[in-house]
Length: 211
Image (cartoon, rainbow, N blue to C red; front, side, top):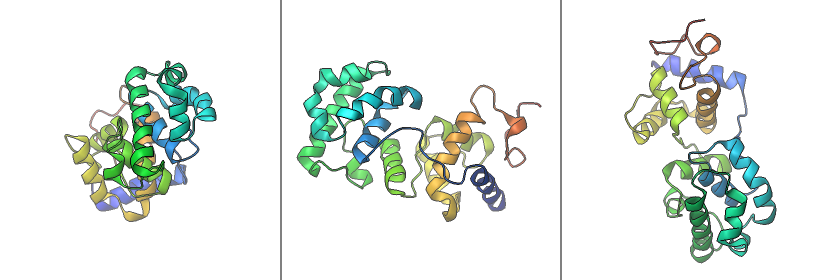
């Protein structure tokens, strides 16, 4: 995609949603880390339902440890892979207390030390919590980037690096949210809503859904 097309692409997405927000509900850096870790292979809606009562009683690493593994499982048992995720949340809570004074680090490498936290999760936390210009490539961003020709790549990391190069600086803070929301609600996997897409004329997708 040409530079002018990329600028037009994000200008239009911004016009429709000037201040995009994560659809995950959180109250502090710790609850954000937990929410994002729980959201792997799960919907934000499902995670929010489970964490509404969880975060009311366990919004710090110590409170999470006080709740305990079994107590945590009771709150998140409606979320896929909850057994593994519960173990990770307890383990990351312990690590935060032991190595980081109970505070979530503002550093990708340090975040990736936390159990259940990979590069994508770390990028989400850095961007959503502190406004860092990171690009968290999930299935939606991977699909949109490849389908539209915005930043084609064979792996999430390749797409991430390409996006960091091609997205203009003025759009970087919100770019990952715009792309996620566009992929979730418009450029859907099975039947993209091409007739109502605001960037359809810029898109390189050959099999557009007819109007």
